[in-house]
Length: 207
Image 1 (cartoon, rainbow, N blue to C red):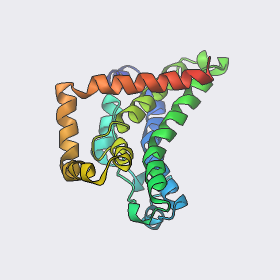
Image 2 (image 1 turned 120 degrees about the vertical axis):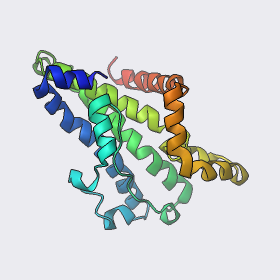
Image 3 (image 1 turned 60 degrees about the horizontal axis):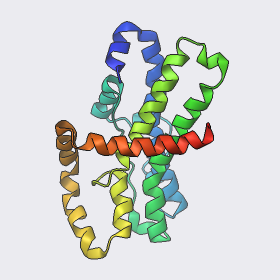
Image 4 (image 1 turned 90 degrees about the horizontal axis):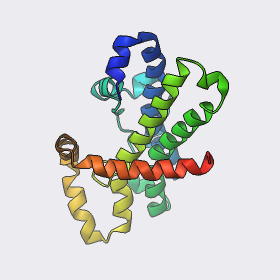
């Protein structure tokens, strides 16, 4: 995403970009917890994770990765899926909540770019496209059906019980599997396909 070079070339713009990017991953996690509470699970609320205070959400490595390379994460919000009622709808809505909020942030950034006051600003004309692009990338990445990504939760709700077991078994190793797939480049074509679908959806509103 060129964020590291932006830091070196234009620190002021980078600092203005850092806040919306940080809150992009924070809002992603808050959305999970908030929707979970709507379906009957208040674990995130009791854990103090429905707050905008970044201290409650920041994962040091994930935040550093986000600000330096344009991709990162916050601490996952705790959700007890057994408490969700109705169960299947609850799991699907909670899983999709984070990706949905990232798409909404991207749409908000694109909408602001339609106004001359933002499009002619040297700072905002740099910041807003990056905010939109990274949020779309975050949504696309999290929709991939590999545990513990959100897409795997959705997939499991549509699989027979006997086919859910393999996904559950690999979840403890999912992070390492994802890193390997990213390092080898296997995931990038999949991410590109999902991103293109999201772009196509957003373009409906800006045709």
